[in-house]
Length: 347
Image 1 (spheres, rainbow, N blue to C red):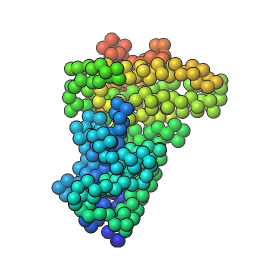
Image 2 (image 1 turned 90 degrees about the horizontal axis):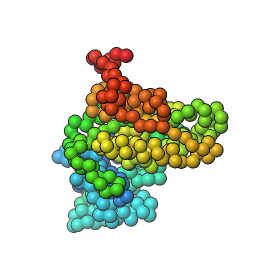
Image 3 (image 1 turned 180 degrees about the horizontal axis):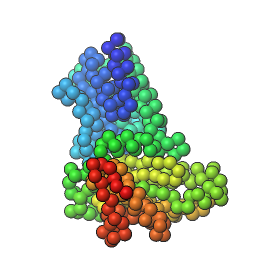
Image 4 (image 1 turned 45 degrees about the horizontal axis):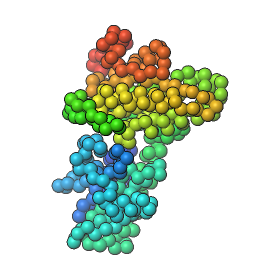
């Protein structure tokens, strides 16, 4: 029992979701008769649920996937795991199945915000006893509760989106998100069309609600808060599950659009802008947003965010309710590149 308690102490000392995931898998791997443990990511792509291995034990160490979920060649439809599929559909705490002789499987879905985002998979060489199930599920519940606490600390209280602190930590830790390794590939649009020979990149957009102070002044802060919540909902429905959306405070939001072409980025950001413009906000009526975006492949995080901010302010100063791309503005001579030396940006 003491080794398990020691592992639980180590596990709850982490302040990062991925490290916490690695820690719980390491804890479970040390239990008797366990053959393998994996964390499976559950995600939606083209209106179908998929699973793919995200973290697993290999040759004595934990390995984490380094590719985006929708493009992972190891992804399979959730229906390929019938016991897990049924478990999630019925909202059961776990599923058991014997896939072949000497391989007994246990799946435990991880629920956050009433959705399954991941699943812990445990395989052992003999059937799971009631005592073994109790031990594994106790470890799992500690893990899931701590995941929920971490998630709560990373979220904006009003909208439920990721907060500014989470953005700073994630973006700085990765040194921005480099897209140099993303190869050119066809991108499939929602209408089935494809764009070929255009590189896939990551894009950072800054979104600002136009004339939001007037909304607060005229209708009051309760209606202003409702506008923020509804804008957050439109953001969620406008982008994919593996994109990231943050609220920076006030009326400013940030979108990290992953692995797509410039043309598709333009379409996605303008679709969101149109969706806001067409929405009828209770009492307030029509609301519009301005958006500036930049590629994440060049410069330090502060530079990339600064480029998107420059494009946003150009959009706000030239009519509002529009989307502006930083590189286009520089090419047209509307903006000038700021010089940076030794990671200190000179303004």
